[in-house]
Figure 1 (cartoon, protein in one colour):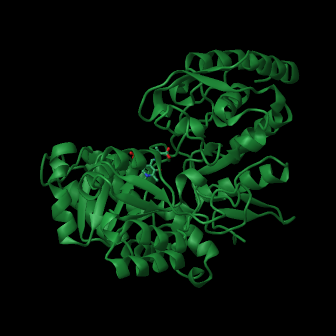
Figure 2 (cartoon, helix red, strand yellow):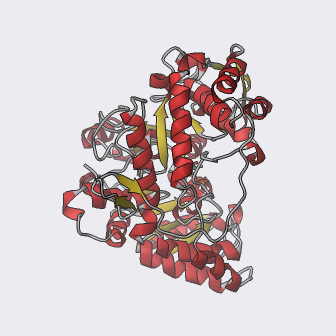
Figure 3 (cartoon, helix red, strand yellow):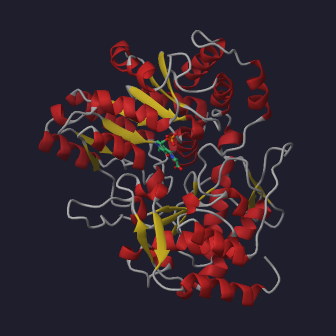
Length: 487
Ligand code: F0G
């Protein structure tokens, strides 16, 4: 289905591999520690990979958020940042870049994506409102709920299937959207939310055909479309790869079309531009005026919004680079390679390959671990023990409890192995794949987890867990037996 990415090369024998279209000029030393020390580290971190210390990690695949590699042009731009509380030239350069890349007139800065979500939800979510979306993101849902709203996921049938060849699992199901409008009435719908490269279902894109259809329905009912553009570059790349009429369209124009179909676009710049920060853009003066006064209250003055001017400079350059197809295709090319290799080896992994990372299906990987004992969390801990690679649990640990205190079981139990843009090499990827395969062969050694300390909100960040048996010790011992002196 996918055509070759520009970050993929073909060997003479026909094999295709991802290729690094950049040279490495600044490096950071990594450590691969012995399995016994990795076991100790995960115990100390409450079997929660968020609580690990990077000195114990070999490949940090927790996220691409704030961890993509910056370009030489981004780093050098930071040297001519204009320090000023208000009126900084750095902000105006970033504003110009956003206008060009997202095509929106008004820009509000925010210190990161969830800060934009806070401001948007405070203004556009009223108690009793519903927010239909292709899928929730953790922080988005928390902000919508804190303001009295409810998220309604209106994805298509294929979206939460692990194995699929649907090119656009991130599409909104338009029949479900119509049903939501009939049931609640347009006045109860704060906005319709599209998330580019839908994060929690495996970085899956939506198509422009789908967005246009949703736009039509929104217009019929006077509804606003809000686009979470945190992974917009990759979604645009997949549209170019998978949506026939865009085959020869540059992603720069695809980005503009996606933004043009939305009244409001917000983003985490930690993802889009490999820097920090975030922002909100719109063409509507009315929307801008409604949101504007919350920026100095929560973020900072309108020309910095909680970011340093150096970050703002690098963000401007990063935004232009978001339209560079060789930059944007990097991470998808590595993810595609990893997914295809694992799939070939019979390891359950979300297909088709999407953006952000390779997503292992923990329920398929560990069918003997009940969902109540957090298979994705257990798999994250187990993979760290056997490889030093840190992934992120995206399953029931990342979910919430209902009013009776029972876990709301996640639709999917995923272990996300993020491929931050231009960070890891092919040999590091091969190492990861080898250790995942070894773990799969020894999967019956992995057991479940239970919470021992559980924060009430966004528990996955700081929560501490413990294994339900001594399975981590047994797993580490088997690793030592098989690998001998090797790490
Ligand atoms: N929206 C999406 C789709 C995201 O993926 C994220 C962050 C946010 C909003 C919030 O942005 O972190 O800048 O406040 N995703 C990160 C991740 C944390 O690891 O997937 P933020």
